Image (cartoon, rainbow, N blue to C red):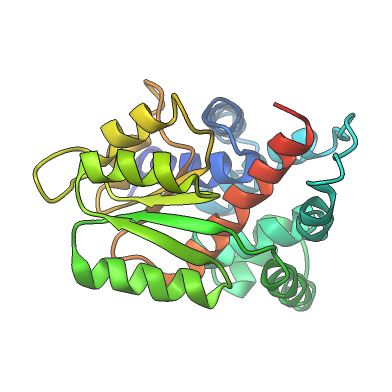
Length: 261
């Protein structure tokens, strides 16, 4: 496979990674463009293309992470923010590289330009901090009963509460409007042929809530050509990958609420 073909094949997943780390489609995609430019200029000639891509994306993300928050959390948000803020940017990066992007410990160390031992310590810290997250209510939008059950068990294992499971677009909209959850996990294709994406677009006009799409076709939502989801997990889902993305979605939701936006 040529370097160009390798770059093209990695782009959708690089977008997923960058969006999850920045909490924004716009910021994440901008980081990917900058990384691609650096690799195409030959600045990663001495390392594998995938390693170089993720290394340069992280360089762009770290430039964003370095900007301090200018707003103090209000008293209702402060305890949650304190717990989530304990997960350092580097720890989250290591966790996402291994759990979601399925890098080996050694390759993650190359991306982060650290020793495997140091990355292992980061992963331990990240797991401890994620376990300390404040519990929230969750709505699951999924038409397959077994998958919905697996999602429910995983979410409950993280200490969160599943308050509703919806199988159609209409059920999903009603569930979110009534339950006002702190997190939504959504499939794209629902039981009656309706769209989970349409359901999310409708209830987000009324309720502000982080949404994670769990889909068999993530590439279709990672083109960068239109408004697309920020948080995506592939089906069949990896439990650690979903755990990582749930952590990120809640992290940025707390940051948003702390800033009063």
